[in-house]
Each structure stands twice: as C-alpha cells, then as structure tokens.
Picture 1 (cartoon, rainbow, N blue to C red):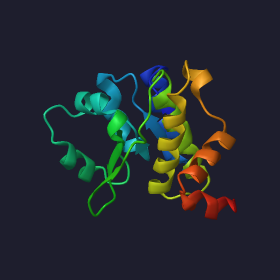
Picture 2 (cartoon, helix red, strand yellow):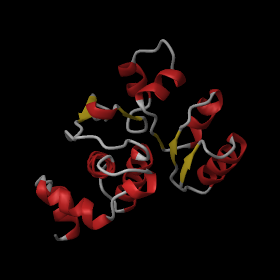
Picture 3 (cartoon, helix red, strand yellow):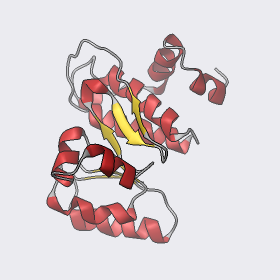
Length: 173
C-alpha cells in the first residue's frame, strides 16, 4: 500500500492501521508534510520524506540519528544528492544520476512508485532505491508529473545503459 498526504490524515491513519493489523506492507510518502505525519510512523514499513519534509518532521534532530532510529524504514530523498538511509549497520547513500533538469514535477511520486514496484518485485531495499533513483532521473527530463513518468521499458533500458546488473539478473535481461 502506498500512502501520501494528498488525502486526509484520518484516512491515511485508518488505512495504515488496517494494513498493520493485516500484515500488509505500507510505504508512506509524507508529502506535502504536515504536523500529524509522525503519528503514522508506527504503522508504516517505509517512510520517504524529502530532505525538507524530514527537517519538518524531525526539527533540530541530526539526520544520522533519525536515520539510525528508523533503520531500513526512513528513506530520505536529497534531490541532486541522491538518497540516504540507514541499513542497520550504518548510513548508506545512493547517489543521484547527473541530469539536465527540465521539470522536477512528479519526481517524488515517480521515486515512490518505482521504490514500491521494486519492493513488490522482491528487490532489496538498496536495489529498490536504485531502481527508484533511475526512474526519477528519467522523470525530470520531461515536463509534468504524468508526462514525465517513465514506463518500465525506459527504466530497464537506462539500467542496462548504467550496467546495473541487479535488475538484469532478477529479470533475466
């Protein structure tokens, strides 16, 4: 289940609680950020704020401490700097792919959709994040949220171009 803040908090919370009770994994994108977001954390498996939303959620707390507290659950997108999370042993950073940006509208939604897709394909968190980084990289080369979202074949082509073998091996490409 993928949740985000363009629907009411009460709805998100009810769905997250239902999913928790029924062992359904939940990815929560707290965008746009709001004060009630922290109430969701105990009911979700993954939370994916961008760096600005993370600062709103955890003001005055060092990022590395927050990441360690929510190891393998808190995945923070850093725009052109990539993505950062804690894998239980230490902070991991997945770099962004350099790009000439046309429009960033929808890049976060693309990231979350691709990350969720990777998880449903039984990819590791690292590989799911890498897949999401590639998809969001492709999305910023076009205008608009929907128009910018790449199809799977485009993502697969970019993975091949970057020689990212994790997906080739998983899908037999």
